[in-house]
Amino acid sequence: MKTSKYSFPSGAATVVTAALISLAVAGQAVAGPQMTTRYGDQFSWIGAESAAMGGTGTAIYRGGLSNVFNPAFLVVETGKRIDGGIVLNQEHEDRFQPLFDSFDSWVIDAAIASNRSHSFQSDFGFAKRVGSGPRAVAFGVSLTDRLPFNYSFYEELRNPSPYPPGSGEPARDMLISVRERKVTGTLHALSFGAAAEASEKVSIGAAFHYNFGTRNEAVSSIDLDNAGTNDSYRNSQELKLSGLSASAGLRASVNERLDLGFAVESNLKSTGDWRQETFTVSPAAATDTTTSAYYDYPWCARAGLAFRPRNNLPTVFTFEVEYRPWSELRDGTLDDPSTLLQDAADIRMGVEHTFYNGMPLRFGFRHINSYADRDAGLTAFTAGTAAGVGAGRLSASVELTKLSGVLAHQFPYPAAYFGDAFVTDSYARVEDTRFRVGVSYSMEF
Image (cartoon, rainbow, N blue to C red; front, side, top):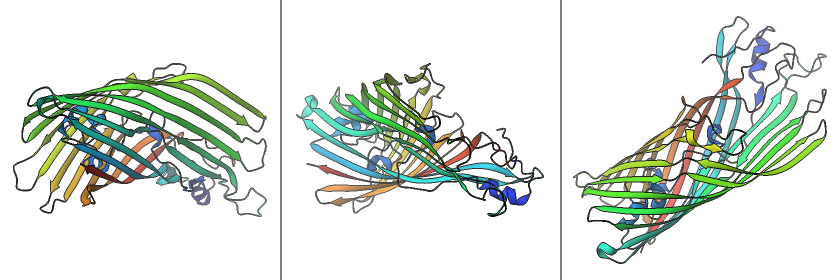
């Protein structure tokens, strides 16, 4: 990657102050990486039981939530099962640029912005088996957060002057502007599924998903230095989406120790009203327009296996792959609906080992290629356990993820705010770290 350098002819003092060009202060807000803020977060959370095992579910039963993974596994249900869960999502985003001294020698990767934020997600599932024997049919209903758009960025831009206050020059660290970008909203899925046995070893299933949600984005900059024109502005947009999609699944029970799962989900064309509002202080102007728009999400395919080895204590290993051709996504908010996204694979692995007291210990690994950057990918390490509580079972999961990329700045930095004291590159290295803690409660009756 080729990057331009900071140039600091004013000496070491300017080097230090230029490194502090911006300061981001954390606040309570929604959480998610910048890369996935436009079309939704790829790192979905669907129950603590699945999350602790790397997000697997294509070849293993997850109650009514199997509607999303593979509806054919609803047939595993022998009675009734209810699932409900919630997760706390804590996001850390740090942005860096290389810092050079006046001799063009690299000093350090300087942090130019840092944000901390958090959010919650939840889900619900219900599954029921009707009848018995080869004609038995299982049904499921679920409500899940499929594609969260959430993202939050905040920074205070300060004067990089090397001069102290009272020297006749603009005060060092004087507040120039406060800039903020916030994206909220989630594309939810209300799913209805059914499954039946086609033979002794093969089951088939299907699910229909009503997808709905609203994506809101607000970008604002407040000019505070009282120098020249007041450049304050605020732009916002609201995109309401809704649409239908369908899934078909297959379960093949090779033997008592090996299950195979396959599922395909259709494309989703979600349509709705797109409202845009703009406001500027100088010149004083405001606009408000509403048009029709859409996001046409591509289809996806999943394949996986679940293996139960011959050992005294019950153990299950799961492995699966999900593929989605994101390059086929069409964005109706653009003049040209075609996008430059990358096709992405989601690799998931998990293991569950149950001890003599019936308490399981779960571990998982997950790697997702980013649809926004071919050189970026999200890696997740997961773990969890469960215990009987009341008439059901309480499951807990923890997940730690890392995502790195080179992205354009959220807002432009002044090229010559204080003479030629500094020069910035148009891109920053962005390190995104996420920690999630989730709990789910399952009850069978």
